[in-house]
Length: 238
Image (cartoon, rainbow, N blue to C red; front, side, top):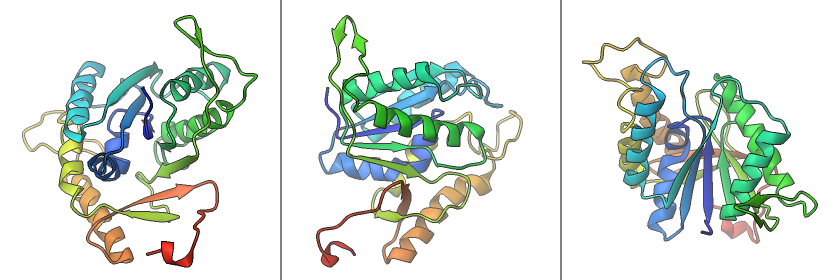
């Protein structure tokens, strides 16, 4: 199955929080999107790997993504080495996305920056013909995504560009809140974490509103890129 966009996150819920509205918009525009979770989020203070898996499936269905896989890397301990790169290369070559969305380049959680670099490196290496990978005994063809973009997470990072996601913020919030064990619930007896407060949940929406304000629309999601953003004309810019 070829995908237009492959969104990758270190943990289940990273993608929804970072670029859920952008994904919902692209799917509404007819694009085929997939999500890859690098870990099961098993070290998370709240919930378990099992509950996160069920929540991730619910979020997948809410957003309408075509496929979701979990690579089951070690939460908190995966590294950017040859084996992890090869595992991601196989995924990139399997789905042949034109665009890859991945974690913030620097963030509070160590897995986010690490996952960002790992995915970026794998995207480059996936285009090298002399790196051979096989799936079910079949040799894969090399494939390099045209674009790798990094969504913004906990830390405030100035975006290189902002996507107008007006009309899709409610779908994003529905997908985020599918992770019932992770986010604010007044009745929950789970330990409190930095992301379990109502303030955090509210911040997801008001950050999008603020980015939207800055580009003259209602809601926006920001991204950074490792390369210059190219346009054919000055009139391509809003």
